[in-house]
Image (spheres, rainbow, N blue to C red):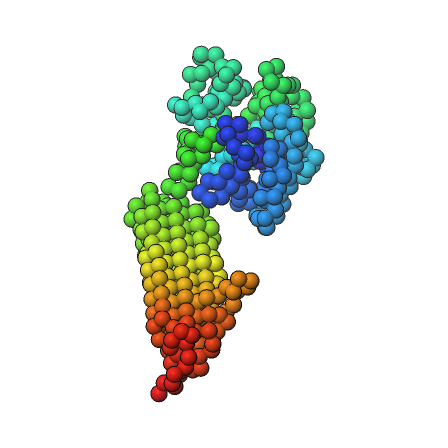
Length: 454
């Protein structure tokens, strides 16, 4: 049985009180719509249609920047917000005749697991039902519709909370809005939906009654995981989803051999990878595509974005962005590595040191209060405290090159473009605006070479 999917992402999300389309609000660093698309990829729905509406151009622009997210994704637009039944109908032209069953769910359910949807699909395949739906047993109704069953416990309908009688309001089985339909039956009956008398919208839930009155088979997979079914309608829900998702991520990392000193203050995004026996201290933020090796100690108070960190590194109270760090590197506290930084093995960067768009050779030491920008440093260089590479002349950036085993005295100003040869030395407080040959000493302002070193 071939399964296609329809993900509903057209709603305005009025209660979010935001100009940003609801499905683009981030949960642990990723727009919630991406969780739905990644889930569709995992469960191999082919094809997948995302129904967009409010903020459609913004959603398209966001997804256009995410290449290869899902190869068989099609976007269709619901130009008028006429309800969930009307939204699914917009996908008919893209899907009719291309699948045996259609899985439908919402893009504002980022906590919904692929395993749950796969279980729904497998049950639908096994029973050959007309509709297989996901329901939830919970004491808190969360304003969900109630599942109505007959005396034989067959599902015969869904009643929305605002339309329910007192007896129906007492029902604890709730509609999650997740369905697997027989495709041929779905496309035929969507056109038979009637607009709701209150608001003129076409409700997908009315299909349950259609199927029941025709004695078609309706199956329900029952869940008791309230968290998984959380739909995001307000900023309160968004914060709840953020907390739950972080707990999932952190639990998986700890079970994989990572130590989180205080999981409640470890902010780790879903695409981050961390090696065994690494320790994450409190108030650490690991974002984007960051990769952390084994036996590291990260934090406290550290932020790392889209960077690679090798084994046995220590990064204390520092900020690292789009950088590559090799093994046994020590950074901080209060250091900053900016985009384009490449750090070789066994480098030390002291407190308040900053490196930008530079390569730092193996075993090099960069003292505190130093700035290294647009530079190439060889192995075993010593950068004295307060050293500055003066890389910008007001119009363009220039490179500084420092050879291996060079010794740069404290408070040296290196006015780029400039090259310091291997094993050369500069005196404290020097302003170097001319190249220094290898094995030489340069001092004063402006610096001059006073003698060759023996």
